[in-house]
Image 1 (tube, rainbow, N blue to C red):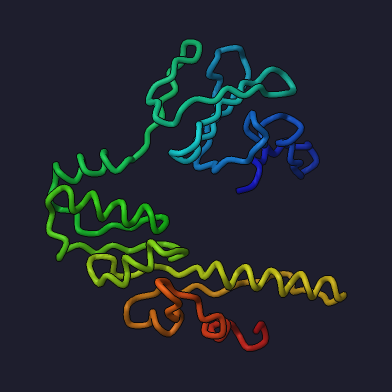
Image 2: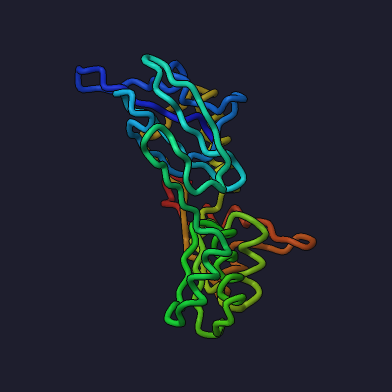
Length: 231
C-alpha cells in the first residue's frame, strides 16, 4: 500500500501532490491504508470540502475534515452504515459475505461470479453454496491468482473456472532486473509491461510447478510470453 495522493491544481496546467503536507496521505498512526474509494463533500456544513476514504473491511474508514489549509483525521469502524456529520448523513455500504448470501438467497438467476481478487471470488462461491444454489451451473472467475487461495480453488476443479494471472512474482523479479540495469548505467524503455494471461486447468501446469504443499511460478514460462526484445 502507498500513501494517498491529493492533487492540487497549480493553475498553470499542472497539478502537485499535496497529500503529505495536507494531512490526507496517512492514517493517524502514520500508516498507509487500502484506499478502496473516495468521496468529497461539505459533510460538516462549514463551507469547504471534506474527504472520506473507505478502506478494507479490516481497517477503519477515514474522514478527513477540512480545517483550512490542512485536514484533521477522524476514523471510524468500517462496519458503520450511517455516521451523522453535521446535518448530512454519510452512508457507507459494504458487500459482505452475509449480504451476498442474502441477495443470492432471494434469486436463482445468478450463475456467474467475477471477483476483484482470489478472496472475493472464493467468498462469493461460499455465499453461493450457503444459499443452496447449484454450483454445477456456476462459473467463477478470479483476478490475480496471486496466492494459495486462488490456486487451490482452481485446482479443486469445481466452479472456479479461470483467473487472470497477474504473476506478481515475475513483476517483482522484473523490478529487480530494472533496478540492476539502472544502477549499471543502462537506459530503460519509457514503458515496461509484464505479461498477464488467463489461467485455467488446461494451462496451469505450464506456468506453475508443485513445491511441497503449494506451487511456484515458472518464471521462464512467463518470460516467454514477453516480446523477444523485452526478455
